[in-house]
Structures are given as structure tokens and as C-alpha cells.
Image 1 (cartoon, rainbow, N blue to C red):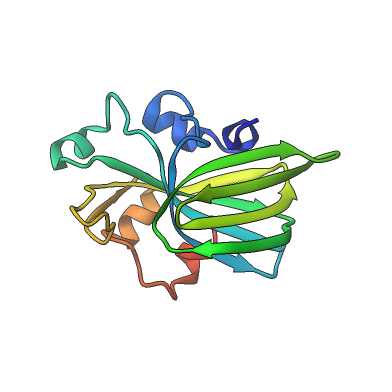
Image 2 (spheres, rainbow, N blue to C red):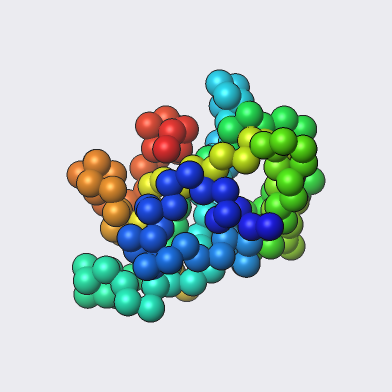
Length: 166
């Protein structure tokens, strides 16, 4: 099973790629945000591939990496074994009972696991040019019009409307 099978709003990625990319393959986890309401975990990840035919403004600006947030709800049994972001990870998803998933993110610098609802949301889709050191602190071009109006780069980490919501 893959995370993309459980995306409730896959159109956010389908509009960029023309399909939904396989999220379980080599995603780079940048950050996570936990919220007791839900309880919810939101991960900020770089997707493993760039669209073959990127949006015109992305192509013109020389952007080469797509980033998004993945929101998991009704989270329980959350554990972090390692945390050295950014970390390229393989994502493991298994169904556990009715409407429940086991999700694991495992890589050299990350070991993260939890159980959650089988309803996953994607949001804050953007593209940026990856830097030599792998950082993502440059200009971001956002798909969502509200994000595009509010941000031209990643907001500060205290910005709850960006990191804490989809």
C-alpha cells in the first residue's frame, strides 16, 4: 500500500503532475508538526520526482523540486527513533483494521512511526530550486492562490496557518 492511495484531495497533485506520484519512494522529510486537536501530524516533504511537464512559471524559474504537506489525523502511538532532517525516507503503509493505517518513515536520519485514520490530506504544494547544501530556504512558487499571495518563500516556523493546517 502507498500513502497516495489514501489521499482525499489528490487533485492538488494531479493538477501539477497529471497523475499522483508515488509518495512511498524516497521522499525527503523536512519537518513535522503535531497538534493535539485531532490529534494530527503534518509532515513537510519533498516529493521524489519533478513533473515531466512542469507548470510554465516553474519551468521558467528553473525550479526542480516539489514540496507539500501531508496531514494525518486521529494519530496514536506516535514515536520518533531518529531525527536528523532533512532525511530521505522510504514510506511504509499497512492497513490496520477498519479505516486505520500504520505509517512509517525510515531513512538514515529519520525513524518515525504512528497509527492514524486512512484519510490523508495534501496541501501547501510548492516548487523550489534545491540548493547545493540541500536546503529549501529559497524562493517557493505555490500552487494554491492563497499560499501564493501570502508567501514567496517558507514562512517562519511559528506560522500556524502554514505549518499547522492544510
